[in-house]
Length: 280
Image (cartoon, rainbow, N blue to C red; front, side, top):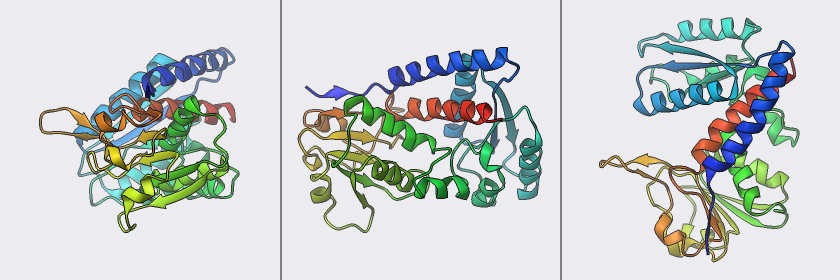
């Protein structure tokens, strides 16, 4: 029987442990603080930001929300980031992506102080991950690895196939799995015969943004399947990158959409914030 990886339950356990850490830190005079910057009115981003703020409140982390209009200039956001970098009450800064087309998000991420970059996307943090000496690890890859470890603690020698090569997820995910001694195949839109590649995977991770792209017959029997994709359909339902119904009859374990990777991303954001505060 396929094991459904309940991201909500795992995230709750992680938040409970973080709540105890935050309580101890607050009692000693150090309350972790997370600042979220949102530019424009993206509905999906609005939901994510509200969920992040709510998770902070449950954990005891102080949250600071900065909502800027979609017409905000690059220099306005740069000024805000500089102010947050200098604020001792702020231990984590998150720029909610995507931003409007006229904004250079990479330039803004580069301005965030590396020790406050709780998304783990600053070049210094990504470079440390590449070198095998990570400090702040990107949230979604970190959460995905924790879910994989719910099924199998020792990943040494397993073949992991990642569909996607973005700097936000695919590339850092590959580094985390290499550090676990996996053999890693990084597949993408130019890869040949994706179904055949996927059938080799002991761990299959899909992050393509293409709804139900991964079919049941792409999956090796007994594989661990992590579905990072999430798309809202016209009827309001949410779908992932994997055909969950078909895959769940073949895989050893699989994440649902929603309720799989998403809650873990937020929990790991809180974890990174607490870690950043503890180093102050």
